[in-house]
Length: 386
Image 1 (cartoon, rainbow, N blue to C red):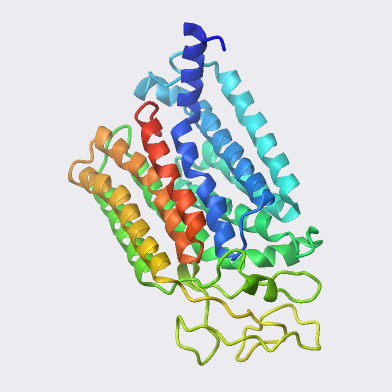
Image 2: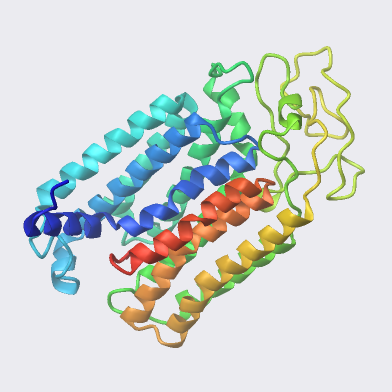
């Protein structure tokens, strides 16, 4: 294989900087956390959701530099666009092409995934072009990360036991409800990091880093001490929890990804077997006392000590990755330390995603997600993630 010449290597380096390639390793865990939250083993549609997320994320990176090219010419002239290594028109074209590719992959994953990908793409473009410097900017960025989790949940959950794609978007999206707490956790972390990022070029006050440290601590405490999910992907209980007609249902979520026990049971206790389908056509577990009008969740295994240990270790990794550079930025909110804190907050998404997967009872998914962290850290030494 012929080696790239100096000019080609320079172009490849410029595009890697524009697209912030090390940050890509923080994206697959969103879809994997969404799949784990609904208690379904990742499948081919999960891979399509990951591909869609990667494309939309990179579209946002290219569009971000295109929209900031005048500001970067003053504050960060070394960036690919102000330095002339990449033409602005090429960056804008890349953003459009990546957006189209992301939506096409979401469409292949099913209409529910596309129904989430469209507002995600709209949020990305609105943030970069309009909202970034407004008070709504951090909220929009947080919303984008939360929607990314829901793409994985909707894409993974649209396939029935018989292998067919479920027909209604509303019915299929119902399976993503248990993923809302995981989406909220990642959105909350993203909101805190985005607030810090507003001072990465000129510095700022220690308020935003201190608030982010407090957010990290609150999330870590909730993840380590809250009730864990008990559904393992691929466990027979998942299949038994689906009613006739192949419409999958899921246990009601509790904050940060746990599942609600039946009325009268102690948290963490193994539910008793479902009495089976009722004569009526109920849509799933009822919200009130008792098993509800449809079949309730079947017997689910309790979290194992190994899973609990894994969850604790990943929670510590998340807290250490995020809080330490944020604390340094709070002590000295200079641009270099603030940029380092933002980079640490971005990389901390990987152990956060892995913790959410372990908490949902998916240790293999958690380990696969956590395995992305060393690669992200290694590539971040070569290309900045901010």
